[in-house]
Length: 361
Ligand code: SF4
Image 1 (spheres, rainbow, N blue to C red):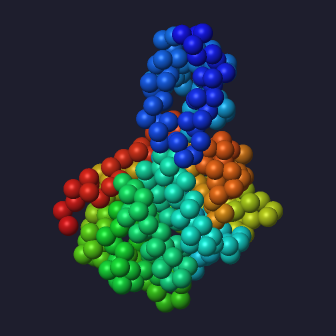
Image 2 (cartoon, protein in one colour):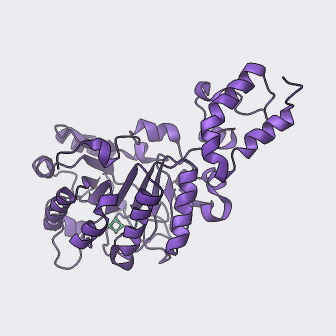
């Protein structure tokens, strides 16, 4: 067998299957090719010699350099940095006003789908700000109808969403996550979650109802910080009954909310691990609570910025890769700093399609 299929040819064959257009075919055939290589001992490149199912857990660098590319199963696309709120701890700030032309964004999403993406989450900034939500609506529709992604979700502060958006695009959206850090409006104002006279909590109730009416799974994200760490939210969260309540520990990112070139100074919002644990303990009766400490958050998200560059948070700041639009997903993702094991450990893969959630609308 070694004579019939020399190592150079084997390496070429494996390499060819990793080109973006052949990626899905590669994913299907990879186990067979690896089995053949293991069974007949085709010489490899010196890296990643184990078959797929037996690959030892290694560092991210090994993963990035090895034979198997990282699969972008779940991607967070922050297509805009602009926002109408001014949260003091914001860690994705308005450093640019750039937004890709719609067709370019769709091209990038198609590349991600070809590389194995199953879930896309649109975030910002505030994603409903661009073109009054039309840009976002078009992307959501494209991802569900054209790309047939199992899960399409949005994280928003909720302040700009109108009922018409649900009428036009609700069918294509699986999950809407609304950021809410407090049920005390004064605390929201202190944090910076608010605009003018609009009441963030009242708005949340309205959005909850629309999610029900238009069959979109409703989720709440809360950042636990110095101003809300002592709050008891049990009653309000249970009444709103989200499918998930994601509870984050306030995180410092250099260049975003701390350091010389940052647009925010979030030091005064930071809480200790112990304080975060106490908050979780107080809310342990809420079954949908999903906690995310700084430790769990670190490196377990695939983040794409407004230029479709992966942002690597390993050094405590967001270092961008090349854009997937210029070099493709496989090349760019090597610099993402993504830790797939941590992604799985934090429960990053869950029932994320509304068809599977079996909700009682
Ligand atoms: S709503 Fe989100 S994006 Fe806007 S300022 Fe607050 S944390 Fe930042």
